[in-house]
Image 1 (cartoon, rainbow, N blue to C red):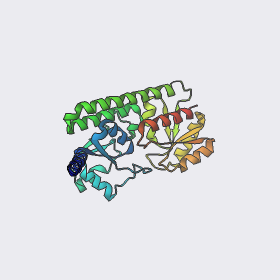
Image 2 (cartoon, rainbow, N blue to C red; image 1 turned 90 degrees about the vertical axis):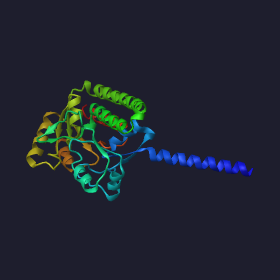
Image 3 (tube, helix red, strand yellow; image 1 turned 180 degrees about the vertical axis):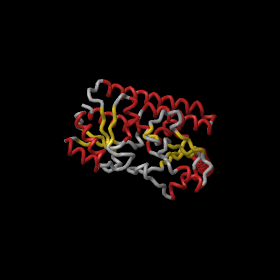
Image 4 (tube, rainbow, N blue to C red; image 1 turned 120 degrees about the horizontal axis):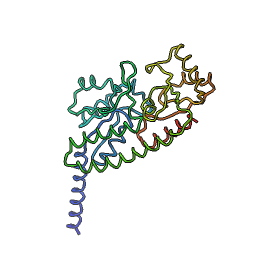
Length: 278
């Protein structure tokens, strides 16, 4: 009985060590924004530990990392950013704090939309761009772990199929709309509008509160287009949208661009934008 107890304890200890080793073997990944979390987890599955820099409800345009989040960066094997200028603070932060992690810009290969001299960074809000981002993440993971290439490839292909289904869903949702102009508080939906043949009017000017002249122009265009809904991102102050909604008798429609559940939230966003075009 005593020998059996010792044997079982040894088995238990071996199991604990194995679990610890598995944890140590995982690739430590830091992503800048929540949607990238799903992209990485769907490819890496149990081979990756993922931390998100941007907390729920935060605005990526004004975000500043906390000391805890800086530690994530220092300990990471891989840092994955959206790119397109969204993480304007990342280069200086990495130089200041130091990290051996490789930084992957997932906007590589995306045809960016420029607003003046600045690129619009909201690339993930079109399923077509999301597919490119996922391919970039896949290449980064197999570079670190080439022995798991087939594992990552299988996972990536399954997720790409889901994104293709989402792409087709968006095509069907927007295909036969008589109204094709979206009025949005922010320019986040520029890529969705481009990829599905819609027109986007935005209230904010370069992410700042609009001038009286711009407000009057938006109100004029909204009346011409008979717009009855305004798309508003949950993370933003809706004040300017409320002013225009009162002027044109429109309803605010709140959407979620920064969910960790990308596929699910994009289905909901596409539905809401589609309904706003009725």
